[in-house]
Amino acid sequence: MAVAEAKSVAPARRRRKSFVERTIIGLAEAMEQSLYAEELAQADGMLQRIDPRVKVVGMLALLAAAALSRNISVILGLFAGALLLARMSQVPLRTLVSRVWAPALLFTGMLALPAIFITPGQPMARLPILGWTITAQGVSGATYLITRVETAATFSLLLILCTPWAHVLKALRVLQVPVVGVVILGMTYRYIFLMLQIARDMFESRQSRMVGRLAGSDQRRLAGASVGVLLSKSFQLSNDIYMAMQSRGFRGEVYTLDEFVMRRGDWLALAGFTLVAGAALWLGRL
Image 1: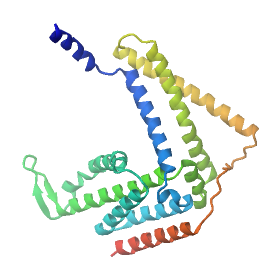
Image 2: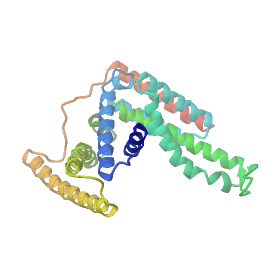
Image 3: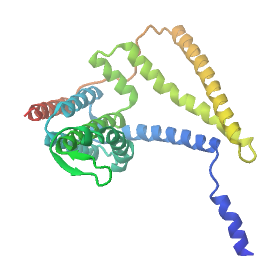
């Protein structure tokens, strides 16, 4: 009797989640990741204490140094510096692995893999079945590409995780980024979470009214209808927001309550970023 009950319970535990359940879980995870980033930006770390304008300029300089360097040792040195900054800014290693290193390695590896075979040069090895030749120049080029992407992606993630998004956008004005672009980015970031919440409420209400599993055709019909509803709501919301902003005096410029003030530590950080980026550019050209 007990064995029969265990067999009947096992398939229920291995039941595949429906489309609605998977969508709700995905939306919840996206919102949790955003909240985690906001909490990390408020931590008492090294990068969190630096002026956002210094971080934007410094990280862009390090990104340029990593992209322009032709010396693998310099690129690896910049990567080690990024790891040190992450450590001093309380960014967990598993966050870097899951959000940057694994996706960047997968995407870049797919792009760089053909290069080790099609790049002419000195043969290193040969695939046993296909007979394709692996060249030293191809491996070198693929290594440069992967290390550059991993280093640049790490610096970019550190900037985003250690700085509130509103401060990043305001700091972009230092680089003379058009105000229209800054406003679009800010509004997109603000209201994409509102749309996520609306989508989550839609699917949760649908889940509360469901009995059993939907057929494949019903799932596709539900997905299409949900996309249409969200698109209609986004158009209506954009018009309402624009009219509300116009009625409150919006004329193209966005003002925030936070005022940036350069302190001694910020000037020292700016000098450090400049020296490291300059040295990497000079050594990377050798």
